Image 1: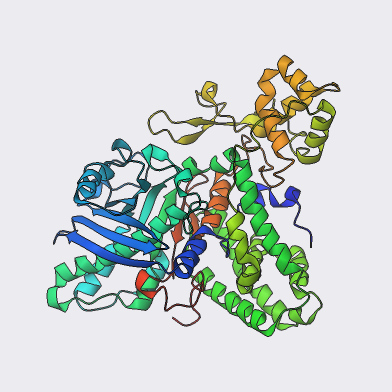
Image 2: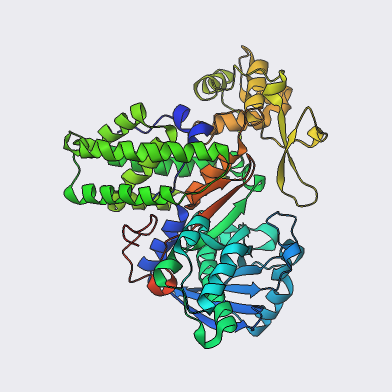
Length: 552
């Protein structure tokens, strides 16, 4: 079975309809923890009656040890903000490589609460912070302190007690570079250290809310019911700072998409559906209906998508009931049917559902989702200009019709905020700053390259000696030979750009659910909802947490 064409897969409308799958990094990390025999404990809990102090969560396995150091703060309400410009948070965190000493704790206490303003060492793998969902936090503390369980409907509506506003890794602010993780059985893979940190943060948050309830209610207080506890994930607020990542890492994006598309192709090629895979798939469909029922959002863009999904999942259930699995090559038949009947959101949800019963067939692909981004960085100067033109025609034909002289064709520009060193999106014809534009105008650059290439003959090296301004575009075009899924095939500076689609694509590969855009430029999500906690990891079914349980 061939893979889906990049010309279809790499459009933002489809990338922005992505869903978590078995290859998403949260799920890969929890599978790795369990299969590697990792154990997690809390050797230090120094939180006072006011909920201020620190705790340590230690994870050990496969001859390694990492520690999450969590700091809880007394944050005045007027300082609580999800914006990156915030300077104080309800909790701050560092994931540290190796055992801790008292000196390490003292060093971290002086720096981690400051986040970007502090200093971290190359022993720190991740730096993060989080704020409470005040409404749900107060409700849960109040109920538990009085010996009662909180309202399950309110937990489902919000989905988390705290949300992170940044999870920094891969060398940012002095933390360890990803090279420090190479060859390590659990952490050598995209964003695995970050996802491990978030999972441990979730455990700390749940322990902290129970601690607050016990201090408030004394002997009347109770712990959170385990089923309700699992229904609390970790929220996240993510804005434009994440958006350019996919465009700036074409080899990595290609690896992610290739792994998912290869997994889908393997399933589509199966000649039949076993009784076990049918039952597993049907269960996933039923559980998805529960997920959609508790997926709340107010933004019209996402409201329409969730509405479509609820219709699509009903159509899928009806289709299965009428004998979809009785046909030859039923998984292939499902995808063909979906392309005719379901929305793009529904089609991409079906991709996720089809992978669910087939872990033994697809999980190995998670080990091929990294990329050596320097291996193909050098421009091939010996390539002929004829061959370069052929690559543009084959892989960038989508950008050539765009009129970049028209206002709508170049309406936006990407730049980096001087204050926070974060990517931002400006309005070219309304705002100053276009002279600081970052090179995310890939479509425009390739079209300009095609124009100057004309019908020239000779080598790329000779062409670039005369036109050095096209080095960036030439490199992107040459990368497309080996990275067919490396390029977002839309104009990233056009008036119709929806940056939230770029965020959604990346977050789906993380394993996020319940996307809730607050504008076209930032989104709230939920992570690790329904996942086991460290003390439940080995009692739970293997990797069966990504959807709500059928009975809860």
